[in-house]
Image 1: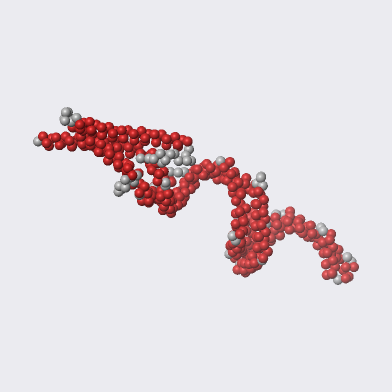
Image 2: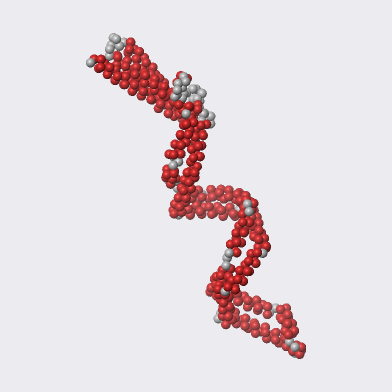
Length: 435
């Protein structure tokens, strides 16, 4: 049923696969030899029994059995051979069934796999058996793998940054950011920020710093000289002859210094209370005053409209890109270290959280099942196309090696069943003739 050429082992097979195929081929040859030998024995027995039937009538039963067994064996030999080629090379219709119907087999096989193996429910049930999240967690928790992934991501970073800049995504993000900032109500936001700042009277620290600044100003000789000159300009000349400017400056500085010291030393000083009322009043105006809201909105629009802002965004992007590219190229990259730690931490957290794993597995099942559903017609077509491209000799050889031995046993069964049927018919014939 196979030519020596078709029985040759294909190139590229592993030694173990070749050994297995060699064992199957040897077993097939033994079975074929036994089946053929049994058929020859049936023919010989039939001939001997038939020739001696006149001397020993009981040999008629043996001849009937052998005759029917021979016919059954020949019929089953024909059926087995007709699956793969034309018996004796004769152009008999409906023979060489597999080679003649390769295209139909390919189409039916593809449709069968699509309908029975790639149906939505079986695919989902099979995917649910796999804990994808646990596989991801185990993979990421391995630091060597996480380092390899971080190196891979690091190599992609320059290309990603270049793609972002070339695609206009940076300009789009800048515009979107400015648009979002333009929609923010500045006055209420500023009021909330100032309210948070004034908790526990933290704004009083500003007053303390302000008093220190004034104190430093009043102790600066150049500042005092300028202030004294201003006083001299405002006083009549007669007062300046009596050095009234110096006296007034001295009294002003002393009074101011005393006041500042009192404010700094007394947390309940009336000036602090006035400052509290001023700050809280300003916050209240920001929160409720339409006039303040209008002014804040105008300041915001003026600020966002300035070209320097877009230039600042461009400078920030260039600086960030340069830093990232330089860092990922470094052997001791901090970016890669942080990425490695991040991947390991993600894997460990994922391993500890069954709910997240369950959610991830559900997502994997939905995504993969949807992918299989959308691509199964393509898989069916791919299988059909591959079957069409199979070499007929190789296909016949593979089928013969793997199922040929079982097919040979059909010949044994055919001889046995045929022989028993012939024996039964011969017995029935004798009974009918006897009556």
